[in-house]
Image 1 (cartoon, rainbow, N blue to C red):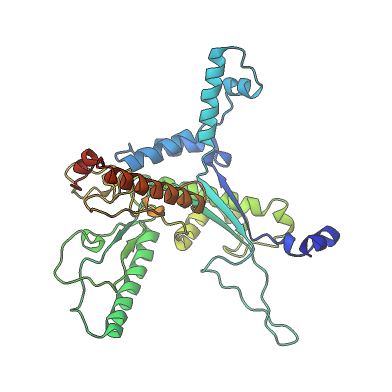
Image 2: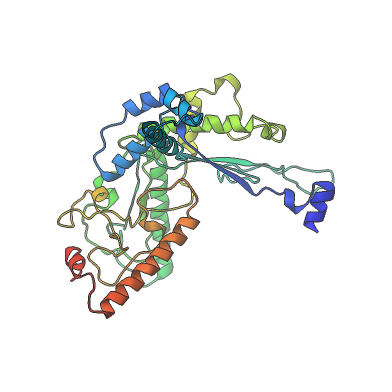
Length: 370
């Protein structure tokens, strides 16, 4: 029926667009000169995570406009040397194509900070306008937040769950208010608040973790902000270009201010409205373990090894998106399927080898399991 309606009238279910998703590299909408200036302001990377992010940013600056690249596009591969150069150039262009910004256009109001006003009608029934949302997500931010178990309980354990929950909710609300203010001002949390300092008391399972997003804080945080400003500008340009231009009446959040929409306008709006998106990863990152297995430099310490086994814990593996140390230029579902398939295969291989009396004893000793 839907196919028939679409064929006859170009209407119906098949004309519905739930969302349109696109991943773009920075060099698609940021001039090379500006990208190079941003890259020059980045500090030297010190951790594996910072090195990867730095390389991805640097690789995304190229514009692919060299004569060598043009020759490859034209098919001028007349000898082995040129073929090798063209293969290298294609590899570089592929890396330039890494989607560093995700755009998601959705036919609904996805912004929890925007509350559309109800419209009164002659019949007395309230109606609402139709809204669409252009979301923009930075995939590889330099700034990184933290998640900690609360360092201590502010009050002794109570036998009354409701009393304990009420106190916890008030505390969490205070934390959230502080974090919004800190994020807007680019401030960092104190050592006590991040949970690094031991305190007396007991943390309960009912207490929420202390989450500090640290937006635009730390090495490269200013670059995150400036690339987001460019990204939001481009999102606005998409909505003002056909075919969306013919469907969108006007931008309502933030309200349009014409010529006054400079860097300051967008920076203020971003700082006031920025939030995390879905696709959580990285809380159990697959990375090398620092010698000794201790220390405060969490960036140098992984949670699982190359076979998804938790360091220092026998018989426990993590097999989901949390083992991915960094975000990816795609939605997570397919990658999580692949991790699950590979994890199941690893478990089977290890089980078979144990049954055969071989095992991974050398590797287990190295990882502190046996």
